[in-house]
Amino acid sequence: MTKHPSEAKNCLKADAISITNRKIVYMKFLLVTYPDSESGHPTKYVRDSIPEIKSYPGDVTTPTPEVISFKPGELLGDETGAFGIKSWLESLGHQVVVTTDKEGPNCVFEKELVDADVVLSQPFYPAYMTAQRFAIAKKLKLCVTVGVGSDNYDLDAANEHKVTVAEVSFSNSRSVAEHIVMTALILVRNFVASHEVAKSGGWNIADCAARSYDLEGMHFGTIAGGRIGLDVLRKLKPFDLHLHYYDKHRLKPEVEEELGLIYHASVDEMLTLLDVLNKRSSMADHALQCDGSPHLRYIPVGPSPVLRGYERNSRSVSQG
Ligand SMILES: NC(=O)c1ccc[n+]([C@@H]2O[C@H](COP(=O)([O-])OP(=O)(O)OC[C@H]3O[C@@H](n4cnc5c(N)ncnc54)[C@H](O)[C@@H]3O)[C@@H](O)[C@H]2O)c1
Image (tube, rainbow, N blue to C red; front, side, top):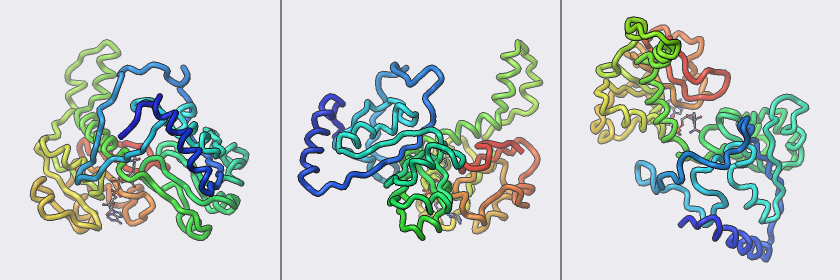
């Protein structure tokens, strides 16, 4: 059970003492975070608490740390937040370097990487680990995505240098699924353009309505029905859509039946039928890259939003 931060502080000391009696290896952790907000790291939040989530779909349990050194709901992805682990690691004697400067040969990240043991970064502000960076990181043992995905690592180079690459599966998959539902509605209903009309003082309904549709009855498809893809399909079920998916691993028949899913054995076959596409598999798989491929030309004329599930070299949302 998670302890209150004040109790957690005492536990950290106790842990550090007991661990030093074992043979502890002190390591250098290199954390890459996005910068604090322009007004500084928040000291007050609009909510006092956030809901406690105890499990993910399929009875997968959430992490159960013995102690945490932050209050749930605090911003942890920025420089000051430092993923909520800086003080804990330091209390155990490890060295922690936090940087936001991660691009180019003279960046802080590349200088500190030379003797780092562990690198942590987030999918939306990734530390790109190229073959050249793996080569200079002589002590590196572990790269962790603080989130989901491995698109920012040269996995062949990681293998060659015997570096483990890990992610925190499910850690924010449900957040992404919520975001996809929101984005699909925003695009199909022409929300942003209509908001701009209202903001500029106009209220010409035709300007807003001409490109605005209902999701109801449309054909929605996802490339990959993993944690995010399946959650999106589940969340969209009440909208009375036709739900399609393509994945190299077919879902269980009872799941397909429960959600009324239409499975496709090929991407091309599915794309010819869709109004809305959600791409939700690793970008590293070249077979599934849609950019510049003939796949997208199949999508019928209309609002046809394409919601993409990868971070690199792409806009997160595009409208065809
Ligand atoms: N949560 C995040 O931090 C975050 C944010 C944005 C995007 N993403 C990206 O979203 C993607 C999906 O995340 P997830 O949590 O659903 O992962 P997941 O591992 O649960 O699902 C991935 C799915 O892709 C399928 N797949 C892989 N290769 C395939 C192929 N060649 N053909 C067909 N299907 C294939 C797998 O079978 C699996 O069902 C990840 O690649 C991640 O980079 C993650």
